[in-house]
Length: 344
Ligand code: GCU
Image (cartoon, rainbow, N blue to C red; front, side):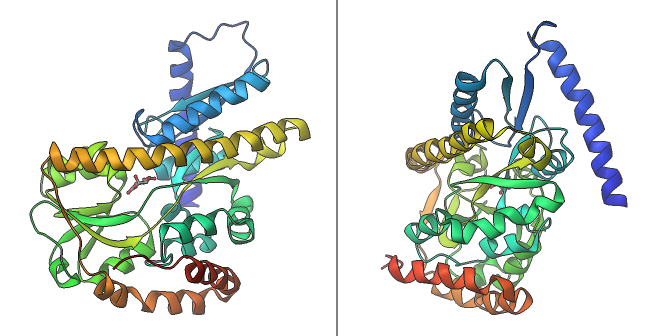
């Protein structure tokens, strides 16, 4: 009840905010097009934003007489958690959410949050491109009011700290590390020996700067695009997770599209995936280069085995708790065999 009330309150405040935003924009009274609102929490330089702008251009080139797509970056519509709730209620049409957060909306998403689930980025990409793997998971939130329409690459998550190099799990002991707001991440952190401090992405920079936390974990873009590398000087490639970002859409909106429109949107979702993944490769290379040379971040390459051993019990525990996910887990293991780790 409390949750529903909060969602409704959020929807209301967003509607008001969006009304205000529309008032500031240049849409004329004669413009009868339906506005499609897409929210995300990255900057306008980020591959995710570039991909969504490509989506906006594509949809408007095909269905521009009917739809006006607007992309809201940088948590303008709220934190990721809030945006998921706005998408659920239909206050906005789409948002990008980390798979981490989605496990609180459907247990099935827990699978992709497991540490060391994928042996290599090739195995990760092949799994996420396989609809037999993603389909049952992506559709499992329909009852909750939204559906996943495509996935986005968010690289590999690694630990980084203000001033303590992480070479082994023992180095995490006593450190307060920000994790995403998901039970899996909290459990992972406790198995690795650190103290999990869950919070929204937008709060991390201030928490690092004011020493509320000692470090965080994320891909390399967080160092540069979010400025975390201005504060954290050690980034350690323990490679604990490859967690995709997911583009989710309000189910009533998606179901309301005609068959022809849905076909255009589906093409647009594929475009988002394609553009984002292309942009991602160079964005990560550039981020690493900038972090090393301009921010003075030291990159560390620890032996990942002790980190993997510490997290290993989570796999069996998840399969025991959600036995329905076993066939999907096994299909991922087949890709892991086909594309094993290249770590020396
Ligand atoms: C990455 C990911 C985001 C997520 C963030 C986080 O940047 O792409 O979707 O919100 O990590 O750690 O919260």
